[in-house]
Length: 250
Image 1 (cartoon, rainbow, N blue to C red):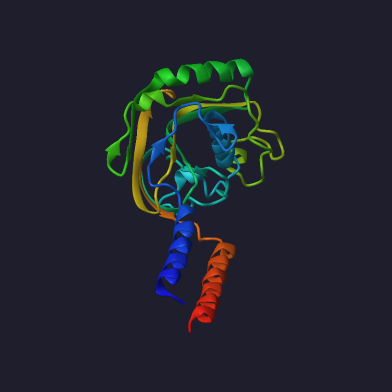
Image 2: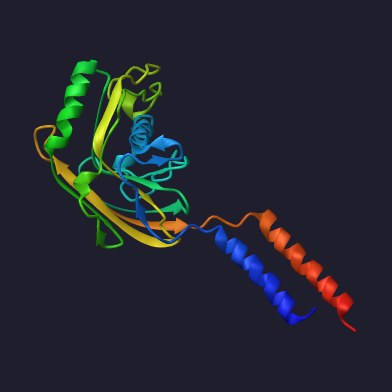
């Protein structure tokens, strides 16, 4: 088989596989954007449900080093945890192509009257005194622009035995409703495969004393493997080209 034909076929295979890899440009989605059919605010409700139903001894915001980051975290959006107060450093892996939902400072209210919940949610933004976020050392501009508030009450699911929300006194089997969330969140998309650094946090006075949180995360974005069907197709093309080249060779 002529060498130029073989090089062309291999080049086509490489380009096709490369096309499956996520784009390298990092994007912070605008507030209110839709991701995988849901608004960012709706994803924050999903984030809180993830926290509510987590085991009481493995709550994401209490993760000391990143070892809990992937626990029950397999949806189309990767949930990144904040802290229960104070700074923490974590290291974890994220599959390429999944947006990251990041809480700079957030708040929820649940299992109370709707009037009490609405009043608390409305007051929260005014209690936040500081916000910050950096992606690979580059500060995020205007972090106070990224307010997300759930428009309606949501259910945090049925309280599971041994869950964090059950440890707060919600009876096992009870619906965690009505719930609402408010906070400053970033939805980040397009992190290229490789190692990235995220730093985020802030301060709120919503509960009387100042509450501050800070996360420094080293994230390893792992590329998805190319589908075996595509690799097999490329190998078949190369093999077919070889046979044709052999037939043409005098």
